[in-house]
Length: 112
Image (cartoon, rainbow, N blue to C red; front, side):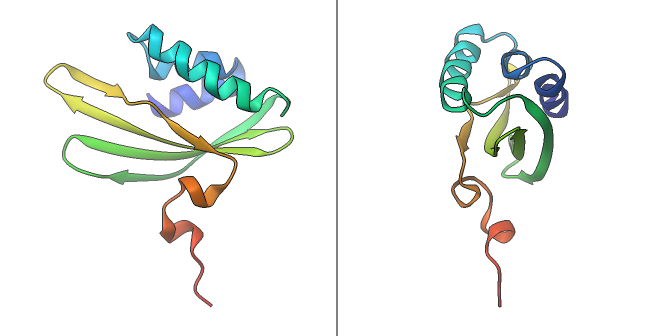
């Protein structure tokens, strides 16, 4: 489901991606779309996406890190998928243009 959303971002648009991730939660999808679209409105088209890392946080939470590559710069995102008795769903995503704010330290901290 996560990669399907990223692919929709490339083939359609960011709104389609969020519609997949937040299927069944249209209010949350609209809220996330408004925030991220406002931040990325001057970056051009999405040209590619990439899953950068996946972490199992607990037996019910999986965290995904990804890059959404716009024509002018990447957007880094972090999103958790939570599984409860009611099923699995994505929590509100976090995003930044600074990878150090989103990606885990083992990816961004370099030892010299």
